[in-house]
Image (cartoon, rainbow, N blue to C red; front, side, top):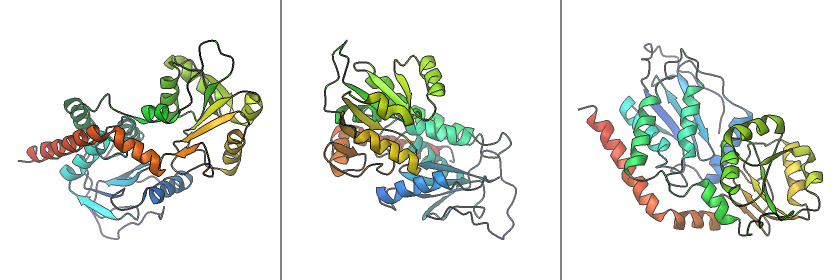
Length: 316
């Protein structure tokens, strides 16, 4: 996928604040999960320049460009939806988790919110997410998507090794990453097992964990292999770290004699496949998701249809 922006030579009217003229995107309907994940990692390393008329929504499973003009700067994406109401409906469906690999998952709502909130205060799309986010929140409430299977539940289900008994000095879960997903997994697992989080900046993470009340220890990645020597642990990968040094440090952890199994939630696999190693896009993992979310998938489809109907009602 190209990370350069193409700008039309035509003159366009000044964009209306809060109005989305179009969205162009690649998602699971146009590309494989492998291709989408590779694009995600590529854009992490090579982000496009900020645009005065558009905003990039990028996750492991989608690349979307929302713009105030129909011929302004866009990424080289395959599918286009034109018009504020249709684009807003799509953004609300995404934020509600209707179009996610794990139907109804909650993380995407925060990702949408953060993508638009990070825009300059004068950007015409700064406030454009308010309507779809409210619509998404209502859809999640109406169709019971709030307490359904999520990435934290998936991680817990894939970690087949039982957690340690209280007071046991060995046997715990080590989580590589300090972002939103890693912290959510840590908070969930910390209810019944010891948790260690491993990141580049443990001091900042410790402060975040303290504020959140998450009882987890934070270690620096470069020292983690030595710190964990002689201990048995499960390893969860939930990081955007993609440079060679980071991958090497993770591989060293995974080959530690004490590492029992690995659950990789990253966009692209950080380790070679092997016994006891499972990645989010593995066939058996996707089958686990499909089984666990069969009912939720139906609710998510109903929520998506409700959102589309609500946006049509507002234009009558």
